[in-house]
Image (cartoon, rainbow, N blue to C red; front, side):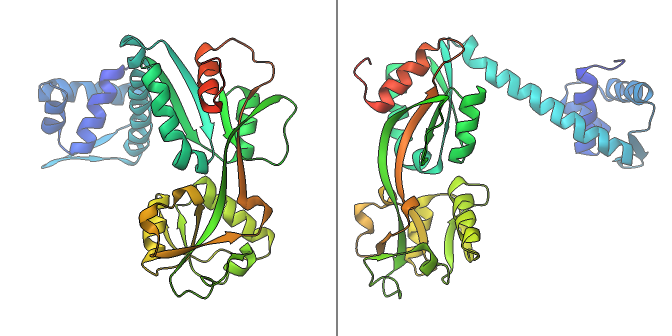
Length: 297
């Protein structure tokens, strides 16, 4: 290429600022040097990227395409530097862990805190996924460890018990379902829901369960976490489904937790790893030992 990383940085800075002088200042360059770099960049790509105006610059249509690509490239480089930084600071290992929403929100925070106390130089890359996606990722090697709730075991993986939990329906006091000890998911579908945001594993799961029944989930409010669901249900805004472990003692008397009768409401969480791993990962094994309470830790 006839242009370099600095040319892209200067172009992005000037385009965002809408002014050559301000953009040049952000890059610690003289305005004349910034202008020259942008001119060379335009010559290299063969199109005009900026339209010079009396009070600054406007990004052309071609320049907008260039800007979007350049911003993505620079963001990827920043992420690369961020990913490498722990190694420069003495990181001794990394474990990629995929887990479902229940585990991420309720159980893993305390367990990972214990792990980091034992191995402070190890990094864990944690991502939330649906259980079927986690199984596929561990098989493909995109994740070293998975925490899932599945009905059947894949033969390519080893499974170990992790936690038991239950999804329950939260109802405001005085709600028509609050007097029941238990209810089916289908009984809940006529009521407005407080739900996790679109893309969250539990949100996707519940939407799919409703669709399988030929119904739809009436989502009134979407929030970022279980505690927000609990507070909004207690305020009377709607009903919600959360793991029982998300309910705290201080919530008693503010809402009612109704057992769900559907078999999928019982959440037997299990840790999974490849049955025949391609390479040895000491810290993966130590993490699995800690999560499962195995004696080799």
